[in-house]
Image (cartoon, rainbow, N blue to C red):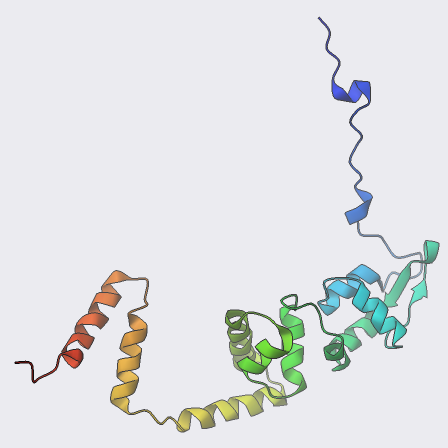
Length: 196
């Protein structure tokens, strides 16, 4: 007995692939970026922020086929490095690492400032901040390194307290042998000599 499949009947239509396809620039505009590509390059989650920058006069679009907007790559890259991008902030948690580093370069900030300004997680802010301090040669990074060194010199805890805090930190280690060793080192400290 013959059973027709769903394509033969015509009940299943082919999926539309055009929605996610990156469009190419018009002829003669090979160095230009689409609105979506410019948003990605600037670290924005949507094209709406690019429209805001265009309305504010910070980006100038060249119109292509069917009114599509195209932006010169050099203009988008210059805007990415400028502090003006900080005024139009991406959605919280949607900052690219490049946008976070550019935000740190604008002025000296701490990890707390980075979390408060951008809405990213503390762990990611610490990771980006650590990378920025280690690798960036920007003058603002040098200022932050100097401030970090000054704070380290102002340590008020005694060496015994620092050692104890390190042992407590080791109690959170995933390795059970490291936890056991830290516990054994901490045990004599917690026992009181006047037990009796």
